[in-house]
Length: 342
Image 1 (cartoon, rainbow, N blue to C red):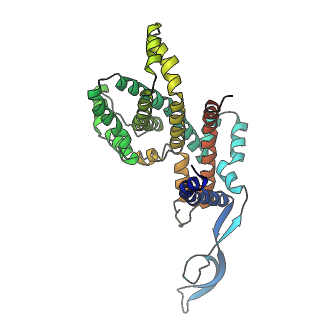
Image 2: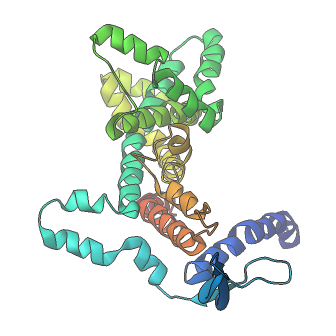
Image 3: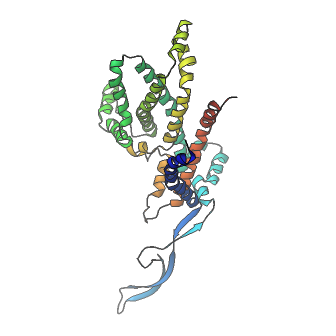
């Protein structure tokens, strides 16, 4: 391919990446070191109260926002350095929690960032092996079926992945909340009242279950496609040599699918670390929050109509740093596997 032709194909993608990824990323990075504040002014106001024979008046000094010609509050942006990150991470509170000796974990969970970080890491690292294991198991099972039934089974297996994430989370919530069908079934089986949304750990279990149920079909399709390229002669040779089913899986199938395992892991880690739909769908804000939800919460106007854009930017940057840290081992492995040998 000629260089001019190559650049013609690549240029639209590069322009889109610069406009919708690079520039917003740089903007968020800059905003994380800035703080936008409303400009206030102090004015003297004469306040009068009813009195006899004349009203009683006095002069008060009040603070009010400065308005522009359109009647909107005037704001100013100042550079605050690492103060935004310090307010988010609260290193002084963390040091005090460790200095106390006991109840460190409980004290850290009172800080929103560490509460969100704990759930985000737990959610990401626990669901990953279940997604890969369940996806591989379904792929192996479907690969053994007759061709006439593979199509319908693949279609049914993909339905959870097709459902919109928020809609799927709401559906699971409606099954278990209050007098939901599954809640009533559990009550009938155990004979005890059950409230799945009254405590944090049961909500987390439902959220973990939903993520695995929703994402495992993606892993299944990827692994099933990989099984179609498996060298059948190698597999038959292993059978002739007396290899058991587990040995064939370990020494033949898994090494063949390992690049796809790395690929699925990369996609899942990037997606699960940005968990947001489950928090909204399960309405778990009172018990469980994620880093992505924390960013969203900072962007919501408070009672006075202000939004903490600088903290939201800092939270977004820290979320990105966390994703990079999780992906580094997989990227190193992928680079080592695809490095040309000579």
